[in-house]
Image (cartoon, rainbow, N blue to C red; front, side):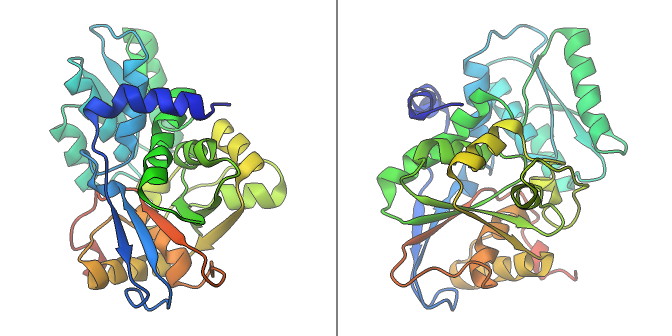
Length: 311
């Protein structure tokens, strides 16, 4: 399991390549909650997602060759890998599960230099194709969430946020667990961390309730960002040790949270990012009096008007 030393080293390593994303303090009336909320604006990262941190930390700690790198992704991880690979002068290939691929994310990956290969159902076929590509070409395979380098890179968000705001609780959207695993590995017992998933992408919540990792078939509006079939081993280990609680929201709750973000701050994020806020706006997580709450807005790679279209 990684620790703070690993995250500090990762931050020093990737700082020349990433943005130090800002925070925004929303007043008690902003979302109609009656208490203020701090937003960590990670959707303003260079690729529109936190995934860039883990991607750079992976590439900067490995030996790269002319075969470059390969990944499987629903979008944000692929964009991060493509951006980092291009910046470091190597090619990238991303295998994408056709079932959960959003066109806006496919455009982002291609725009950052990746060769994008769409793989038909089932979702797991993309990972198999990715592994075969790595074995055939010698390309470095970058796992989307379950590696030490990935967790250390994502954990740098916590390191950054620690210097930006004094908070008691942080709500984090969860897919495969790389983000929350890194966040937990930084904060450990110093902060209350709550995981948030949608009903149709939740693997961590049922895993905690059952006491073992469960496998699901992700779907719904957050699936392109939170669409892992199970929580990864490293994220699961961190959650068992440090996670304070979990929340599950509906697609409708997520949709409404995005509308509130737009109405209150003209902020546009993707569904997976709005999922974390939905735990508050839907009343699934209710803070105690004077509890200082923050929400991590993890990504912004969505069509800008997605939340005003017909469901």
